[in-house]
Structure formats: structure tokens, C-alpha cells
Image 1: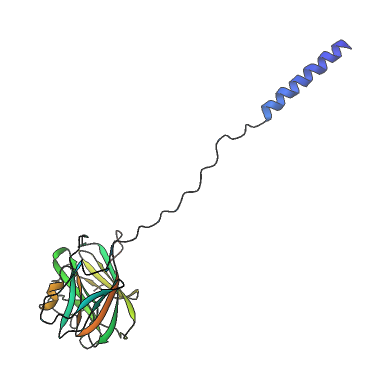
Image 2: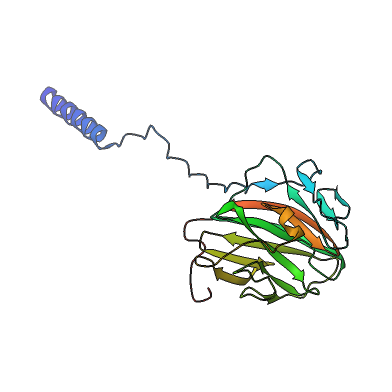
Amino acid sequence: MRPLNLAVSSMLMFSCLLGSCERKPSPTTAAPAAATPAVEAEPPWIPANDLGDWKPLTCFSQADVKVVDGVLQMANGDGVSGVRYAGKRPIPVVDYELSWEAMKVRGVDFFGAATFPVRDLKTCVTLINGGWGGGVTGISSIDRMSAQENATTTMVPYKLDQWYKFRVQVTAEMIAAFVDDKMIFKILIKDKVVGLRPGEIEECAPFGFATYMTKGAVRNIHFRDLKPGELKTDADSY
């Protein structure tokens, strides 16, 4: 019986060793956590909390300008009334988008026209919103022609006491404009002369807002950088 016990014992030891070889080691490190989606940074915002960063124009037709609950309110004067930005935030000149909201409170002409730079701070244009009797929207000026007589002329019916969202996208070669996120024009400016319509509106440069014989309000003013290739030349460009 003794030799048999030794054989059984040897077989049991072999089985234990074999079993230990077949067991997989337990993992010692946890699976990597899922990456947190990147949150897009808020575009630079130009606040309108008070008139500290906004300077009323000095033209003879300038009317009262004030800020109420973060909204720029420009009264209707005898002509152009408005403000020029004089704060410390840098103003972009190329490859950017400017967005704002404007409302016509009273009057029959443009109510929140934005003047902004193109290529450099000395070359600016204005997006007129509702000029020449209330409907004309376009750029002043392209090849020395105002918003009612160049390729950007667009008729938009604006209502009183309603907020409209405006956007302009600017590159060295193009300007595109949107009203309530609908593109109204996109124009090639590479070989064109761009500049401001002579007159009181020049006081808004390089960045400002104005009305014409109309009471208007402006709020939610933002800038952002355009992504490479975001504003492309295509069949809709002219």
C-alpha cells in the first residue's frame, strides 16, 4: 500500500501545479476612464453693462444713449446717432465673426448698424440694417457704392419691437452676412475697394453701432475666430 500512496500523492501534487498554471492572474489596473468631451470656449464677449466702454458719437445729430439691463439704447436723433467701442478688449480685423442682436423700437430707418474693421483697423465698413426707408440691408461701402446700390443690397422686412440676430463673417477676401442665421449675401472683396460711407458714421470706426432717425437697441455682442476654411468661395459668392 505504501507505493500506491506515494503515486497518488505525486498525482495530486501534479494536478495542483497544473491548476495553478491554468489560472489567469487578476488584472491590477482599472480600464482607462472615457475621455471628457472638450467644451468649446465661449467666444469673446463685449459687454454693454454701462457706458464706460462705449463713447457716444459727437456728430450734430447725436441723440441720447444709455444702457439699461445690459442693453444699449440709442434714441432717434435728426440723423446718425450711435456709439464707438473704447474698451480694452482687442478688436479682430480678419478671419473673425461678429454677432449681435438689435431691435427697432421706433422709426423708419436702420436701427442697429454695426461698423467693423476689414483687414486692418483703418479700413472699415458698415452693415446697414433697414436703411433707405426701412428695408435695405447691405454693406456700405463696396467700390464706393452704398448699401442700396451695390451687390450686397438685400431687402429684409423688419418689425418693431422684435429682436433680430445679425452676424458678419470677415476674411481678407470675403464678407458674409446673416439675419437670424440665414445668409443674405456673401461677397468677394479681394479686388474691391471697401470703406465707410462718408459722413457721421465714420465716428463709429473701428467698431461701433448706430441708428438713423430711429430708436434702436443692441445687446449680446460677441466676437469669435473663424475656423480655417469656414468661409469658402463657392457658387453663391459674387
